[in-house]
Image (cartoon, rainbow, N blue to C red; front, top):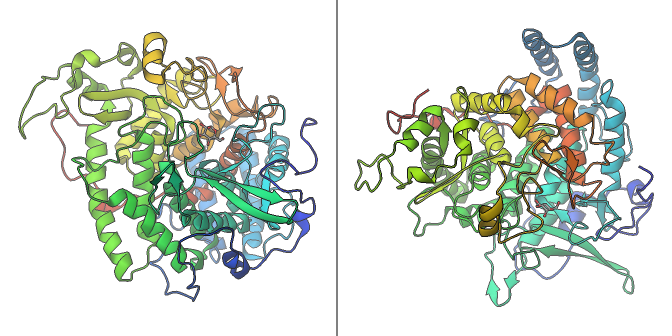
Length: 598
Ligand code: GLC
């Protein structure tokens, strides 16, 4: 802890020591600020009609409706405790849970009372031995706040001053998600609202890479605050991929933005933010980008390598599971947030059509379990016409050796990528967890994903939750697929490294599937090391035993991911921020072939 500077005057943040105590600007002011020339129309701020009821499809609706339902929330917590009893919770955990449940009333009172003025109040979720780790994490998270004209607008990627900064001094959209969840769960939604509005303003910029203009809807990968000491003026500087290594635009940013807008709305019960004309427009712009018609023969989204969390060349070009799952989730969130006006309705129709096709495609062609693996192993090739079983002409010889041992009797997962003559058999954590949270996976598939994680605990969780992907690319494959990337050597970084940020996704998926023991076990593993190791960005090795070769310390999303996970575990009603209830309309109607059965 002593290595962290006490002031917040790092790059990307401001020389603004009193910022925490400053009165917050009103929403109107924040919307009215002009950072730089842009081409968006943000004039109309009049009160809009109400959006379609948020939470129409939501998971455990009664559990976590925002403001008025204290009694229901209290009851749901009791129910959860009862169901945990039947799966063997330890007495110690029970006491912690009981304590927490008795505090739930306070928690809801807090949600109903004016929000804390200072960002320095005590966190509410810490229990027992995790208490000191959580409060240390809160201190670190608050130190990572980035201010723009006196308002907190995000969190810096890492507060590690010991290393070259590269772009770790920026606020990344994807990195901010766990921070936002932690703040929302702690009853501090203002920073999330500021972030949503600021990134929306950035979306409306004119974006160019060399002479090529990017589409209007693209959301930035990251931004930073530039302080001009001469004019004593602050501006935001965004990166849409034009500065990023590899020059790839972040496809995930727009999806995370929509998912976050829903989480904010769900958490606060305040639909006025989502109803703002500029938020509606921002959503439509993102949706237009991914719903547009072209040469596609699949409902999945075609992407360049490195356009998401794995932002370097790692063979994730094509139809990566991470993007498909986020796409699915964002579409479902947008359905809840779009207004029922003419434009909104048109988009809702397009979304529904796409969701139907996408869920069918993903549940059928991306799914792999023992039965399906055996079918691929016996696939005939060169089939022609509609009757083909091996539709993508995958050659069985392309099955990697490891998959035969890795696949358990019970369990399955969504493949990393499926395209003509190609199945990427690697397991990716983020896509599989989002598949569960969004219900892209059927109930049976969700259970199977958790079964696989339990059966392959050493490989996927080991000494630090969770592997970003499994297994690592080695030797010739590594040379060919990563282009000899020295940062992505085997079992390091994106190539089979273990990323603490993924803990919140595993915990959420575990709770949603009724398997809190998996979440508890993963949290316990993480708590033995994270704080001691100063919250590294990632761990290396087949078991995730070593602090990553080039890992930043005090990586904000490791800190926030832990906090979000811990708070969800302590109060499962928070799950509603990130989990959607199954939509009856998307229930599987058809089975692809006899081979795909449960
Ligand atoms: C690395 C990660 C990326 C993350 C960024 C900031 O580039 O690959 O996912 O957003 O660091 O933490």
